[in-house]
Length: 56
Image 1 (cartoon, rainbow, N blue to C red):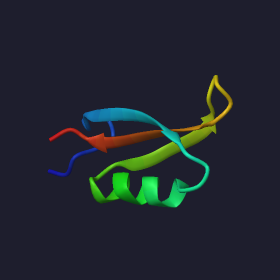
Image 2 (image 1 turned 90 degrees about the vertical axis):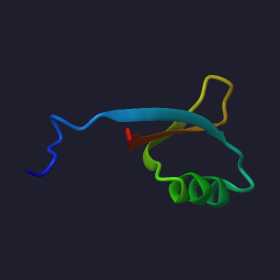
Image 3 (image 1 turned 180 degrees about the vertical axis):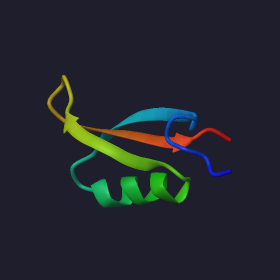
């Protein structure tokens, strides 16, 4: 039986994105199994990335 979206367990991570190396930061998290959900402007004005991955 395949796992469906209803049964998947996720963990989430929020990290600031430095303007001079966004791609490197996202690639590093992607290599660790994290999937980008959204990038928004944070309360201090910089970009913040929201990531998720399935729990082990």
